[in-house]
Image (cartoon, rainbow, N blue to C red; front, side, top):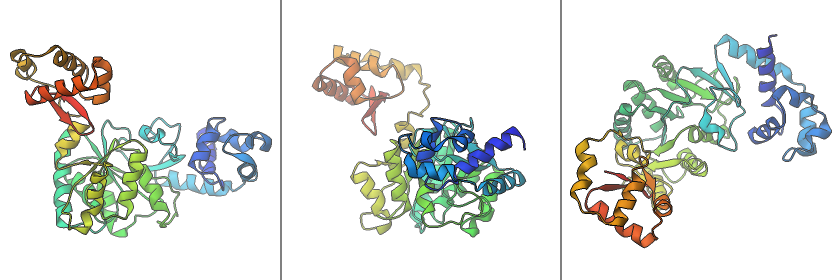
Length: 369
């Protein structure tokens, strides 16, 4: 067994220890390497905060390495990429999540750390309205070098993946089961198309893991955590999409929701997210592009020079100087950097907006026109 395979053996085994989940594994790895965990003394382990005697006993008594060996054989046979927390190819955005998966299994070529990652999710029983929106959004986003992530489920997930393949956008399906199967089975050909077109399939579950109900919330946290923003296209008040939106909010990620009729039960979830300020209203891809600061920064001289023909107050000039430092600036940062009181800032911003010198973005952000 090579050193690399030996290292992987302990990394896989770490995910098999009873009572040790991603949070505890992360704590352990702050103190020692994966292999060292299995050779550590019980009294050392139980003193680690968050581990204690019960979990320490689970570690020291573990000897089920045959399952880890079986997984490695599967990985090698099907050319699957195992991604441990410390791997350079591991999704970096997930590392900021407290419960990031200890080990991921990946089949595909899409960059899990591409510069712009967007999750598109929604109900499993979508309407024609959702299909129209999803197709339109992906087509518009295709111009902005994004990677689309979803859960390969029926409904909006599948629509997002299909639209991505159609528009040559890399798309990643995050699974709630092992890579030895595709669930639902009806999406087997779609999964193959995603991989062929430069996308991929990602999961934290070993092969032979069935798509049990309790695996889906775990899958959803990966979808939310590995993306810059999550778009909820259509959903009722209950379901996986609402869970994913809540998780994204908990990770301090941007969430967007497409509004629907107040009489439409399949839009109640989206409308509620917007109503409670848990999601920004999204009517087109440009809303997201502006909010994320991904708009083309190239401005014509005419646009940049327009303020020369407008008489500006001292306060307005100070605000423009602050906004000129980067693509978009939050109102709190404007207040701090300008040194003006909040009422003076508010008045200056209002005048600048009325004169079309600056524009407001979702999330109390402002940018130069």
